[in-house]
Image (cartoon, rainbow, N blue to C red; front, top):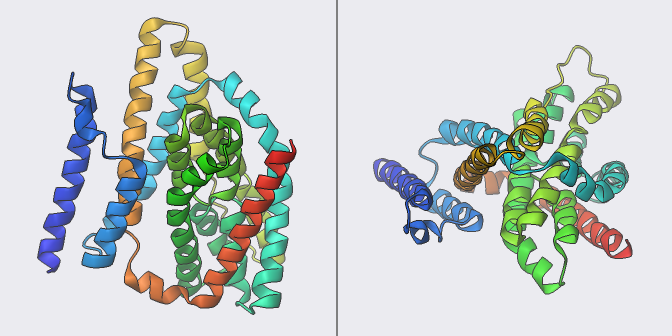
Length: 325
């Protein structure tokens, strides 16, 4: 079965990739129309839960690297001035929500559910900023054990996968504008990958707003890591800086001032941006294929409840903020 699962995995990956590339063949774009971010994530999830993980190390490494490259590539399709203007309304709430989420997470996790200190803190960190990236950065600082990292990442990953499926339909049902949905998705969805995927599913403007706010929010990993170092009295620990965010900003600068002003340059930016969107879709397949039955068993009920309650609080409070603007 393991041998066949590897063959099926490679076949699925090859079919999706080829179908996506058909978009560059005149008249053949319809062939890859079915390969959307939610579909790619769903295929990965179904594969992992039925056939296991034939390439766990490859999945983890490929999803991390491809996500970073994809985010940088998205910068070549965005105008710096317009993106900053459209995303500025979400900046103030970002500061408040990060601190508020950490506090509420402590109350729910430690006081109500009695989740262990580090696991509760990691789940709150992942919800407050950018999911797995925040947990990966803060984990070593607070000296988290492998089991604590696995439970926290598993909890965030499950909720993150759900968000990609349910947020766009909820946005449509509530009649949200592109601006509103982009802000909501950036703050209420955990990982950058699902934020970008949900924004892309909702609309072009929502994608740009969501990406800008989410990556600005992700920069809070750095101060959170230093605060965590002080709270847990961890000395000599290295803080992981998300350098790809800076390259994303650089890509926007290049696109805005070098590529967009010329027709040829604009075409180059559009091409890079298109490749980035397609690679992001493949990334979501890798992420989906990383979820296993072992992860589901490891998570347990209390950390999952903490994650769900905290997610509900930040989602509803963000909606209230958006509709009060």
